[in-house]
Image (cartoon, rainbow, N blue to C red; front, side, top):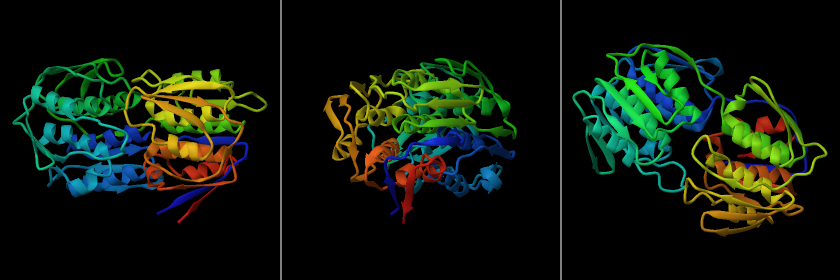
Length: 418
C-alpha cells in the first residue's frame, strides 16, 4: 500500500493548475446513462473514484473510451446490466448515483447500498422517498436497493434534509419522467448546478439550479453532448491552505473564485493577502502573521465540510485559539488523534474541536482515515519538523489528482513510497 513521505519546512511558491471537480464528474458520468447517443466529457480528473465509475459503466454495457488529457467518451446505447454490484459500490458511495438514471431511462435498477468514506451516516431515505413519490416501487432486499417503475411521473418533492446525492439522483430521474417535478430543499452546491447544466446541454428542461427549489419538466429523450467539467473547489481550497500555513505565495489557475467565497474570506481573516480574477486566485502569506479562525461547517453556500480538516491544521499552527464546529457529519474528526500525535493542541467536545496554535508540529507516522483527513495530514507534514509518513493514501488518490507532483512543483519535499 502506497505511502507519502513529507519533509516539512519548505515555503510553497509558484502556480498550480486546478483539476476538474471530482464531485461534479461522478454524477455527470452517471447521467450519461440517460441517453443512447455518445457523450464526450472533458476536464475529467484522473482519480480512483473516476476509474471506479468508468468500470461500473463498462460492466453495465456502456462503451467508454478515454482519450488524451482525460477526455472521456461514453456510449450507453446498449446497456445490458441494470445493477451496481457491491464489490464496486462498497468503495465509493457515489455509485448510488446510477439509481436515478437507470430507473428514469429503463424503469429498473438494482444498486447495492453504498460505502465510501467512514465519516458518518449518510442515509438513503431522501433518494427512496423521492423516487416513490415519482411512482417507483422501491424495496431494500439483501443489501440492494431494488427499484421498478413503468415510467416515472412528475411530483412535488420536499426533501427532509439537504442532500447533494439525493438532489442529484432525483434530478436525473426527473428529466425523463412524465410531467413536472419540483424539488424543494434541494442542494445548492456548484456540483449540483454543473450536473443540471450538463443535463440541459443534453436537452433536459431544468430551472432553478443553484437554488433550493428546482423545477424539471420531463422530456421524451435526451441527446448526446460535449461538456467540460467545472474546476474542483476543494482541491483549490486545499492548496490555498497549504500556501498559507507555509508562509508561501501561490497562484491557482483554471479555478472559479465564486465557488470559494467562504473559504477565501476565512483565509483573509487568517492573515492572507488574496487577489482574484475570472479564473485565477493568488494568495500571498510571505512575512505575514497566521491567525487562528473559527469555523462552522454548513451546507452550501456555508463553509464546506470538505474543508474542515484542512482548517483544523491551519488553526493548529496559527497564533491564538479557535473553535471548529462540524455540523454536517457526526464522525468527521478522525484526523484529530493523528494531528495530536504530531503535537497539535486540540480538545474535542461533541461536534466542536477547540484548537490552540503551537509553535511547531513534529513529524510522526500517521494514518489516513478518509479523503479529506488524508489531505489534512499531508498539510500537517508540510509544516512539521522532520519527515512525516502518511499511510493508507488510497483515500487521497480518490479525490486529489497527482497531489505529490503538484506540491513538488511549488517547492514541497514530498515523495511517494510504494
